[in-house]
Image (cartoon, rainbow, N blue to C red; front, top):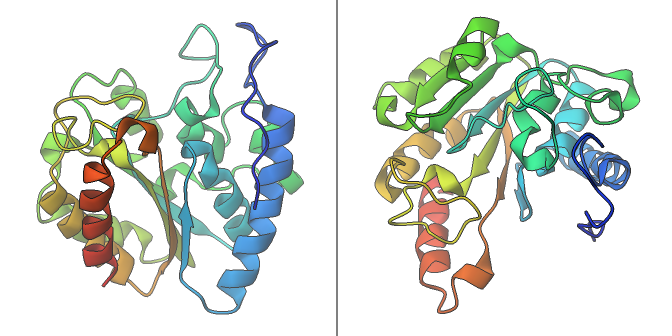
Length: 241
């Protein structure tokens, strides 16, 4: 599926999320495709783009019941006009949007807001200095900083998802430390390593409740010799098998 042009030429602070109209239309197209694949019993792998890729799967699954999201990301993506001077790129607001926070042309597609309830979301991988952690925990979104992810974390997440119809995994590869994954738009130190990501993903993706995963933010332009792509591919293949 061809996504809309990423165009912010006429955007200015206060205009809301840029590309919102095109993003909403595209998200509904993705939702139709993902929904058909899920209905056919397929495990869905959605590649490419930035964190707003989650909107399509979230809508598709909300149409079908009560589903959770496991949000693996180096950033909380919880920016709203309530906690920030203005919003802009949906990638910095994706978790807020799928939990019903933000402009209705993105949060209420098909009148389904919120696509994911706060108590059905889990966020893992944010850095120590993330400014939204207190708000996330206050509203009931289970949250682990990167340094807090241990061998018990996947089990605790799966317990949270057990009573639901299923869940989706969102993976922003900047959950990885900048030393091993610099080919992203916001590389930060303090992230996890490839072996930790494999051990985090394996039980989540193996769960019969997991219906799919989206993977984004990797930028091939920042990886001219393909080194980081190869390492990421090895990690994902190992986690999926």
